[in-house]
Amino acid sequence: MSAGTPLLETRSLTKEFRGFKAVSDVSLTVLEGTIHALVGPNGAGKTTLFNLLTGFLTPTSGTIVYDGQDITGQAPEQIAHQGIARSFQITSLFDQMTLREHLELALASPTGMGMQFWRSVKRMSVFKDRSMELLDQVGLVDRAGAPAGSLAYGQKRALELAIAMALDPKLLLLDEPTAGMGIEDVDRTIALVKQISTGRTVVFVDHNMHVVGSLADTVTVLQSGQVLAEGSYEQVRTDERVITAYLGA
Ligand code: ADP
Image (cartoon, rainbow, N blue to C red):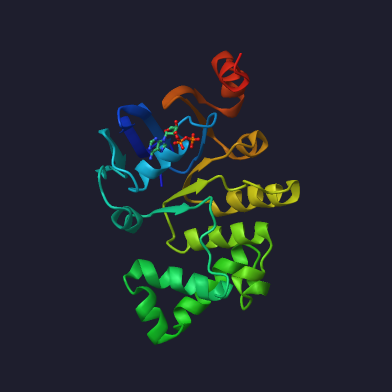
């Protein structure tokens, strides 16, 4: 990893929905080894941009370059295989499955083994050990055998982070990692994201400015699908255009 090298770049990225530009001519550079925040008022295009980066949507025009390769138009699985993982805002856990089973399945899936293989081999020790390591990293190792449905909200979000980490991603995309959390869980999540971002690149969306200020090396502010401002948290926080966009003045 070398600091200052772009890991992810979008060039004039545009997504139109029936003529409406949800993402409009966005050129974004995410440097390797940094934590990059995407912020902006509701409807600014943050989710659409995330969906473009992860292949869930195909751009109308423009390109996405990741690790020197044009990945525009690739399917989500192809993109995931190249080391981009995404943690979802909306919980995607199975209540009856234990925490360890979630991790084992996540570890089996990117190898192409998936559910069938995972069922038939029933927890190879290599997956078991790695699952426990990942749970330990997010502070849930004591709950390894518990069903995911028994976790508190903040713990579920931590489990989702561990699942995203199972791919050992080079680029981790976090969709509102602290949404709906109380202050204690927010601070725990900030510490956790700092810890797991060591040696990787993180792009996250969050509305909580305490989170953005605590984590982000660079902040890109979107408004109406376009880049309104970019810089350090201090720079964008004091930018008149950003203040106006947020306050609607
Ligand atoms: P944000 O995540 O910043 O709140 P979104 O990316 O969800 O913003 O949405 C940006 C704009 O694009 C909004 O005006 C939204 O209504 C519109 N939009 C998003 N997805 C679709 C879609 N599938 N069809 C039509 N319009 C959409």
